[in-house]
Image (cartoon, rainbow, N blue to C red; front, side, top):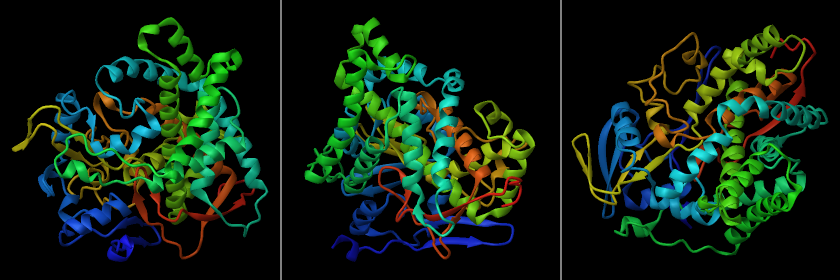
Length: 475
């Protein structure tokens, strides 16, 4: 019934011989009204922005009884995320309520002393210095995954988001848990999270009516079953580690050892599960969606794909790229960076004020919300040339990018702990698969980007793949 009352904004996408305007919802020319806002947010969190929101600036808007300050300038993003980060560390009640049953007090939504004690631990485990140690696993899993693509007929269609989730779930399983997750368990986690994301409610009415903590969310049988699917796999692996069956050097092994050395951290089985679930969700979902969008963009911009193949051939010759090549693959890195600019995995970063504050000329009440939106600041037309165009070159040749205008991993003390891990993984996976395969999107298909928890294509991305010739220098 809700969807009959709400019509999403049409998707804009344009392609020429040497340019591509990436798909995005057409900005609104008039405010949607409260009903349109509620129904729109339940469809997608990125489709209800006005045209003027795609310029940097500070503004406010009201939702029922709440005033929201939209923080959309680099200097004020710095104020919220760095200068006054302790006052604005809390995720919004909507996000906390939506994720607490799945992630518990995991790092993504924890705060205060829990966050302070666990952040250094998790950050150390996924630190950039550990990436080379995990790099071989990334390559081995991707090469094994590519063997499966060898079996597809050139006209055999499949959905790319799901395929990329299988790849990244196996990588994160091997690096977090230290052993193969296996097809059945991987599918259980992927399906569980996908079901959970589809059923989550993005509009917590209680908060907008005045409850600073929002109202508890009722979880029906579908959502409970989805959570149980995810928790069952993660808890089983943790219990195996605690029983001595874990692999030395995996992330969970490091967490368990820290638990034994530092009992004051309170890392019981539930806490370990929450952190493992957070690492797993962040590690597989965000990279999977980034790779999906990257392949979509390359399919629409064959001149970029051709240049990528030439770069890979120049650096790697006739072998697959390795983690040691990632630093030299400048265009491959730029493609991932530009993909993250156009499609940040978490496109909205709402924060709740612990105490009253002032951002620019706008007062923020205690319990009030400031909204930082990578989706908007990274497409602001006064900060980016051709902001809706796919132009990886904007990140090349020593380009200077404003740290607070490009925030796909957030910024400040709460920047994503796995930033370097995820970025290296995405570059390496993309380079290996692009070198081996041509990925074609179904003719005439146009992806609609939507966000409920993360930024996905609404109906997925239907593709076919074909093996490249060994020379592999042409798209």
